[in-house]
Length: 340
Image (cartoon, rainbow, N blue to C red; front, side, top):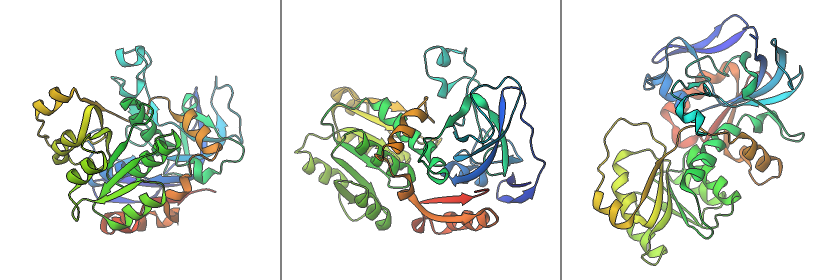
């Protein structure tokens, strides 16, 4: 069968590999669609410390059950499913307190083990989620990025009437925008340095869009909030040097959700944190957010296909990688059709 295999940094191709078998507790999924994520690009570039090569990447995918392993219940051949890529042990401290997404022995499908950029993939049955009847497999492949958004918003604990400022209007920034609107946050401000991304953010419901190079973001945010600052800030730009500005534009008692994996240190002015009693929270992957996102999609409150800028057949996936590398301003979500 065909698989997108990364053998080493910048060494990737569509390869022929053996079809995996469903071990006890697993199911074999015939993959229909998979989305290319920024973290896939980090693996390709060799910037992911967790991956071991060779690796079949892909953690945003959906498909149809082809076979089930011994002991699997509630999953049958022919079921349409999407896959939560987070695999946790269930007994370490984070798992015991209900935060399996930071399990001490965490594995992520598509990072620590082979993922969805292959025609068939074996995954733990516990990680499968049945799809609502009218949700297409293409839309279902995009559940995972919305769980990232749901997780960071949950970590920030919004209150009624809170404003949200999103740094970065890439795919994750746009999912945070959509998720925030679906959860009742009416005023969302989005800032980026790419005009095309800001235009999409405005189409998706951003109240204000700010160009980070053409406008004074700090001054404008303070003007928009009557000098009070913003209670919720989501860092989807993942640029460590932006943290001091986030601290300055945060309102007293504000919450800042950080999503980046950069090892570069950030300047943190303790005075800003203490005088405002700010809360800085990290957010990694998702903590059991798939049911919430599936319900929002099924009821039409989330429109995942609005994120898709390109659909490519599996054989042309390397072209999608090249485009994301060299012309990221032209692409939002690149969706790969594998077996649909």
